[in-house]
View 1 (cartoon, one colour):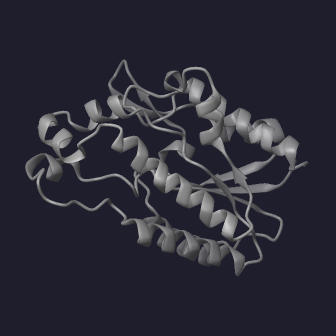
View 2: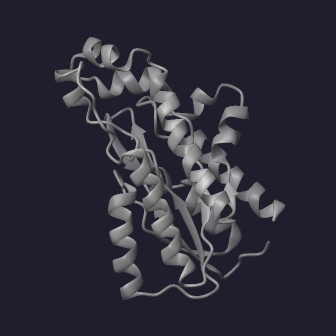
View 3: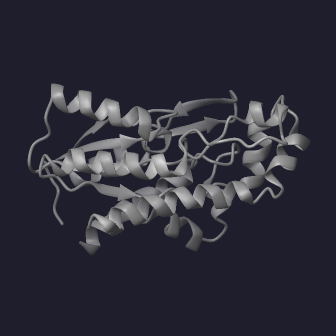
Length: 231
């Protein structure tokens, strides 16, 4: 598949934005040679990267509608979508304070699926078939350490019952993204599978347990290129 001179609209969260942990400054930064930038350079395509840190399907749905009103995509544009990591996350400070109470994720599961379908429908109405990217797996132990900073870790573990619930819950959202894409006959770049089939996938994840590091972005880039070869 040759996509030289084609335009790619990217909709997602911090992963496709290219945000990584800077362990020196203990902050976040955009990786210069992140997967999206490398892919655009390698293929000769142009990119409008609408991905944002903390983005959920609730926020994205409204942003996509506004963006399309301002600048409708062209019929040969490529749309890449990746969501779920923030949708499936919880308000850990509330869990820390009340571990015996039920707590909903940022976007309840049924609403997440509904939002995905609504986003797909927007692009379908424009005669575009978006490509979906599955979520890279998180590393639950690191992620627990990250989200429990300054909070009651024991209470969070009490609510979780099992630290691996963090991994499984995120996987449920990634699977829902893939399932929704398949039900709509859309193409999928299965980044999650590529990560899990690699040796020591945790070496591809930042110390916060969820953001791919530089090597992780290399793995995502390779998934993009392999996808191109296969279609």
